[in-house]
Image (cartoon, rainbow, N blue to C red; front, side):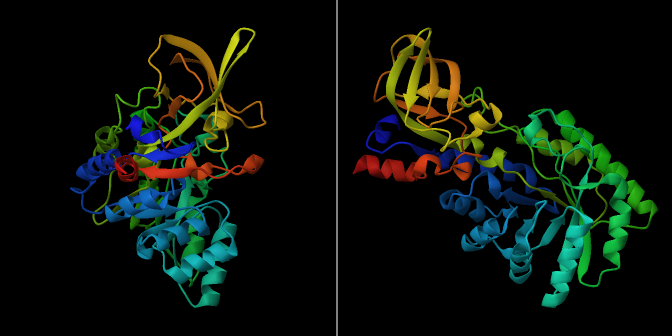
Length: 386
């Protein structure tokens, strides 16, 4: 495939659609056998239409966190009644769009939001199905910036307020309470975190039943991580361990529906940012490989200090140590320090791996840069044959 990249202008995102198909097949092999289990792809991970098409064709619904994502999903043939709408700050126009489209339900995060949805639904002559996002106060072994299930986080309704909020909704004629939603964070690799969530949900269900409240839907969010350090060793995440955790530990009631919102685990490994070395610069004891991609194309290393495995696709000489940096006028525009690469020179193609999630979708035009082009396996092979 490297040879087929040579004629393409860098930087660009390459999506390995064969790996994406394998990943989707692995997910469905574990979920299709469970009646009442539903898959919603978390669109925020990657909204590339070429990727969305394959996910939609596999029968996934969508988890959206903005009106723009809802529009994108509708334009890419996701059925409206399989779209769920989350987010701590839904604007009025987004709520109106969702109600007009007829989405499956809202994941509601506060009483003020519930009141606004009820008011808008009443004005539009509609009934809004709502699921309450409960903050379970369950920690996750992940980066502090992407944990969402602790009491200190901005997301969700405190579990202590759960019954009160449900009772409020029951008195509103323009809303219909349909379930609970949870999400404790992302890039989680330890099943203990998901086990703790199962136990907490079981506990909350017992509390609700003691109050005569039954749930139609339980939405456990997503959060399963990928192997950023050795992507070729684990190209497909451990879906068996993930889904088995819920199958064994979550005490679903008869007729309940279980919803998942996976994003990173679906698309993370299929995407790579392909860039080209512009210069190799010596500066005292540092050696910089300056590439033509930057934090404008992939912000995760600058934003989180996130690690991505980096390969020199052109080099075969003995390994040297480089700081791999971009051209953006920011000191934080660094992909990796002390990165071991084959001796690198101007013109070498560099692959920044595991960039399918939160890569292209977070790209910006800072420094008036163009947004990156994108290619799938089929497109690259087609251009290679021309």
